[in-house]
Image (tube, rainbow, N blue to C red; front, side, top):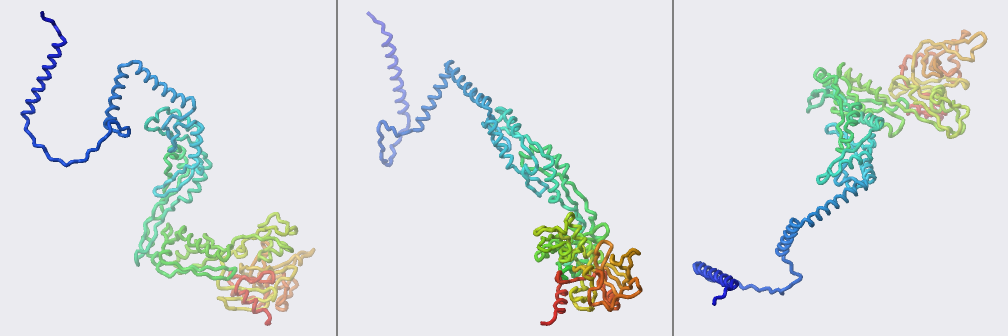
Length: 584
């Protein structure tokens, strides 16, 4: 009897299939070419325990990780609950993040302003950080290659930090992931900005360059005129107001300039005159009329040529360049006396005239600045005026409100510039020295005595003022008078020969040199009184001497009047004083 066994049949068939594969493989190997065994170097074999906790195989680890990640992904795809859980977790994390920033008053990540990342900061933290950054922010103000740097405070630019942070918060998540820039909110202090730009105007200006000249080897050639540049304050303020935020964020702002054409562009019409002037040895002479010092300054031909320009009226002076030379000479003079200086406008006028006339020299005068005086014991207004060689009415004018009878020790009063006694250009080579103590006078020309004689100065009740003055006027005859000569019948006057005025006692009343005096009585006063104080303030000489002095002394000739209270200022006055002293 046959028994059906399906299990065995299946197993039997499996054995058959296995046996068939084995036969096939054997046939295939039998057909393959044989290879001789290759010799090889014996290498030491490293043994490893079946389990080594310190051993790490990266390939195995990566493979396992890949399998696990695939399995996890498959489970997530095929398990709805796991997928929902992951989505819920993500929503929870995002919700917590948004809630923290919204409810906590924070700026969202990766938001920038003024180059500062304010992301994740609270409103107060961001405002404080931006304000600190703003205080230290500077702008480069540019005009082409020229640059000036100013802080936001100097420019009157004010940061509204709260408004800037509010704008930063309003962008939300726009900064994720690449970042988002927010412009600062900027206000402007107009007055501060205007004042700064007005100051910058002087620094930034480029004056128009009139046609000029320069040396090319030994040849003087012309230089074409060029436009000038000036800061347009109003337009610059408007431009900065419109772009304050962008400029602050960028750190730069381009100034708005205007151009101005030169008066003359073509140098050729005056080239010959320029060659004649620049080719000579030019000397600038300086003279201090108070000390009787003489200075001489020379320049090289390049410097001299740099002072020349062609203007609308001909060859003239380039004033801004010449002013630098004047400033340098003032600095040199100030090293010995801080009051001394060369007056720029006066010097420019004289230099301009020398260029027009193609002169080889020019005379410049040394001026003096005002100063102060500190009251000492026994001082009075009258004594201060005489000690400093200043008419009393001039001292009174620069000290309004001062009660000269009530001065106190240590009180400071103003002294006007001594230049007030020298209103016209001095004559550098002539000087008259009067010694009130010895009642004598010497006139010098080029340092040598020309005249020397006795004089008669003012009496004690109408003294002659010591100081440094100059001949201001000439009159063959002049009238004089004094309040002492007045009565109920009126004031009598006298007539003076060869009068030369030297200073005003009060406006309209002048003391000076003169000869004999014709009194109202018809008698003469003069020769017999010379040698002792006898006048009402003038300096009287014998009539012949007065006439000689009158004809010799030009207007502008310096008159130095010395006394025990006013010591000599010049070397000539010191020489006269030493020669008048009795021998030891």
